[in-house]
Image (cartoon, rainbow, N blue to C red; front, top):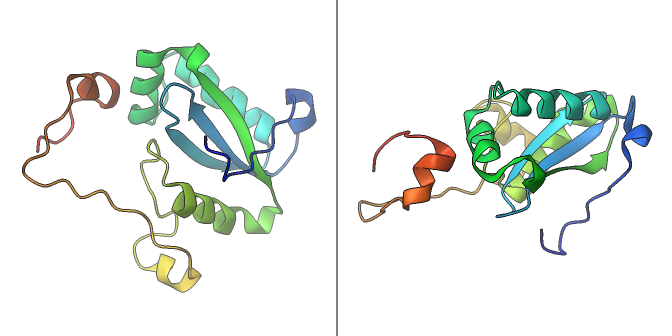
Length: 146
């Protein structure tokens, strides 16, 4: 990660029953997954348990984890917040950081984001000349051909 983002790192025992926003960071390419939890420690355990068993529901994150290995992923708390602010703060960080592994970049749905007055989600437009690198399919799966 670059130095423009301030990430709060804490040991695991200090995370029990804490509410906030977190990131799972791929240390090889700095790709991110952003999430929220009312118990950050339990959420961390849940994510990594599923990833290690190859049963995570997010196929982008799972494929990257399988490809790069568990030692290349870290869990970082971005922000502690109030329970009532979880959705707004998660959406703020998704818009700000444009995480590569999040499947949904708008947690409110297509129409409700406008009412939240958040920064727009970054879009990647791929034209007809886009050629996937060979490693892309290994990390992200087959997906749609361009």
